[in-house]
Amino acid sequence: MQGYVQIYTGDGKGKTTAALGLALRAAGAGLRVYIGQFIKNAAYSELNILTCLADLITVEQFGRGCMLVTTPEKADVEAARAGLATLKAVLHSKKYDLVVADEINVACALGLLGEQDLLDLIAERPESVELVLTGRGAPEAVMAQADLVTDMRAVKHYYDQGVQVRKGIEV
Image 1 (spheres, helix red, strand yellow):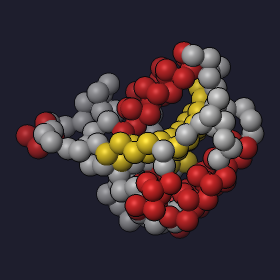
Image 2 (cartoon, helix red, strand yellow; image 1 turned 90 degrees about the vertical axis):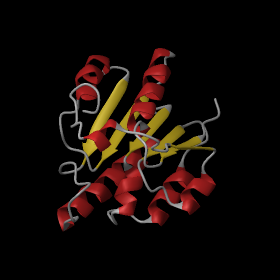
Image 3 (cartoon, rainbow, N blue to C red; image 1 turned 60 degrees about the vertical axis):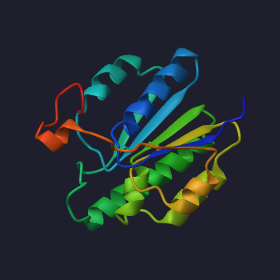
């Protein structure tokens, strides 16, 4: 099967959720799935159910905590670089049909990875592997190399009315 490069970006909610939905669909069809989460290192609710699907979906986190509002430290850069190396090894392992690089665009926007790192990842992707890159701020040059780009646009959000993160919905 021919694989493609998909990007879910934008300031709207749902990028990771869309990638997880695709992962579930792929696993349901018998495809092997790998999800590498950049920046994240926490117990998100989706991880609870994915442990039940561990024979179908592998998940690893390459962060030291959700750092969307903090300044990156050297250890954050090292974690992202290690994650990128792991992701490249996974792409070439021939073990997975779908590889999700969750929040990799944010890792790039924060300077943990470079734009060229993402371009290299796409260029090195074996033809049979579907690669999904998620996160706000996908670089234009990276989007130009993708086969599918979805820009999640925030139109209205209950956060604007002071609603806090809700377990099972946002985390």
